[in-house]
Length: 415
Image (cartoon, rainbow, N blue to C red; front, side, top):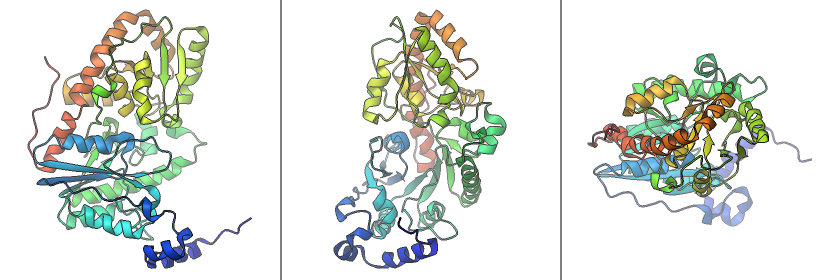
């Protein structure tokens, strides 16, 4: 067994290694670096527009890229999305994919990255994650994202923080009132304590940043409970990618698809006993899908009759929007608070059938008794909601004040 190196010794060794120029290390001791020179990607050209927006480094569900394209609908705006990518990821498109080893370990790349981003007029920092890897981390604040935001603002950029979910959703608050099926009440989930500390620290940091003029966006409406001063930036889905002419619920036995990216947060275990029992009775064909790439998802959802999203958080996000864009019947637990935010934003009701661990069997009973009506409503209302709120136009309108440009009037869905 290899003896474990004490943390102080490891940190000292790392500091010594970082003082050696990377080209020298690559020549004389390449094993000390977790990447090769060929792994370091070139930076994309900075947009030649008056407004230059940089987003990164999360790109969860491809949203950094999608928001960048939405922003470019606005006059005079060019945008670049960056993603720190792990091997074997979901394959989401990004303007500037950077291997996680380079992002976290290359001081040379980190310094160049800082100089590169300083050429943009506007910066959106995703998910409380640093844009420059560990460059601005300190022993007392290992997450350099907040120091980066302040430094970029001091350099003259307009900066915003964009919260995605677990980076800002406070477990104790969610458990106390958001939904009875909150995943944070599981005493065996060791991560809850870490998330509580992390989100409380993020909450305090965002308060300080807002006082310094750095605004906050959230990607889903439920996060307004944690960040009431924030602005909701709707997720973006390309309708044409998901569109299908095949109506749902025409099979004798409907195909029900559930593709949980994180089963504990999605509440999969809370509802799967019901689903497997319905499958056993022959009411449905239940298919749980995991590990598929983003390129495989459109065909998966277009082939389904019913898509199940989540049953623990009470929110809706990219997966539900993709299923609605495909005109599928979507069943999920979405709180009234989130539904009210949607209604206030666009004048339409969220066409997601409410189902929770206590009511799911009854929901399926009613659904299968009204196949024609349920299928027709899903095929019509789902794509309409996505067109009005999630095709990028509304997200561009939300970003416009931050970017200092004019936006088109919002689409109310009225025809």
